[in-house]
Image 1 (cartoon, rainbow, N blue to C red):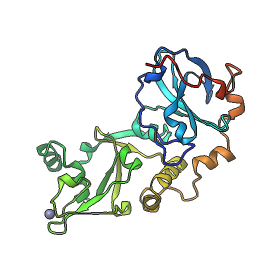
Image 2 (spheres, helix red, strand yellow):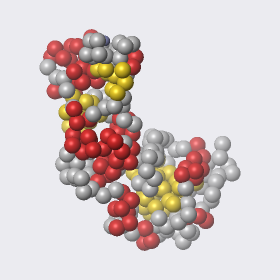
Image 3 (cartoon, protein in one colour):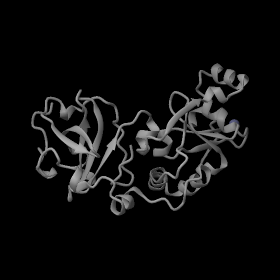
Length: 260
Ligand SMILES: [Zn+2]
């Protein structure tokens, strides 16, 4: 999921498994966004970003999200949550919903083509039909388009195309976009303006963003999460944090000595 406090920072470890440094540690009950959660110890991996990051757990020690605090000003923080699907989690918007499978959109012949190739060339077949299948990964890192001038084939993977193919910048606006997860399920983008998507794309892919705005019809006046945080604090940081205990964040155990 995209960090709300740092441009370009993505939290990739989003399984519900407890992280190593929280094993065998005592956890305290905290309240973030009105949810009571158990907070693990400081994850030192993100200190280099100037962030104090703590993973959050439910009653069953399942990881449900994280809290990122400014190291210099711990009262400035944002809680991020795991949602049911990768788009909702990445973009921190639970309105992203799975709608149908890709197969339900395909003619029988097209499906057979995919099947014959063990579903390894689905992206390429879609490109030929003018569709770009956008995965969560591609929202994090803009894909490279390989085009062969000799035969006209296009691919996102160099190994899937002729050796003569050349890499080029991707123009999202050239394609109809379908949001797809690794199981070929298509997701519907929330119909309302989604500042998070817009901002995330802007942060991750400055150049691509304009094209995507066109392609996705994302409102141009959307705010970035940081602006949103400053201008419309949705979580009332001072009040919602520390309800369960009076410690200020930097006085939490800095690092577990029992880890590992
Ligand atoms: Zn070729």
